[in-house]
Image (cartoon, rainbow, N blue to C red):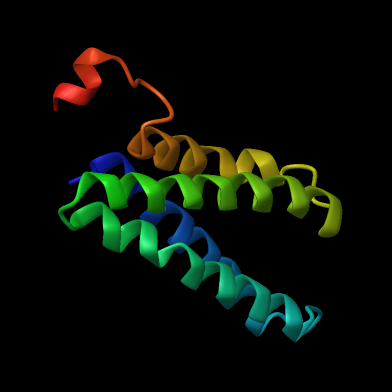
Length: 113
């Protein structure tokens, strides 16, 4: 079980779920923005599911893909949505998912646990 991947997946999913609800009920917001945030909410569900399932190789592969997704969302969100704080919003789940994927702290002691 990857607690860091689970925490990062929950953080990213809850962040985008809140943004989905806010965009859906904001009268000035575009409904396509709510759909985009809803799709991104569903895109991080595999990080939660594979963090609790056995199988470290598959878990690491899924969490690495989710890390790439976090980075892509962080940088594309800055340029597409024109929100300069978007990388700051996405940095905690990115770090947590990257740690769960084995990108960070991959020393001998980290692999023993």
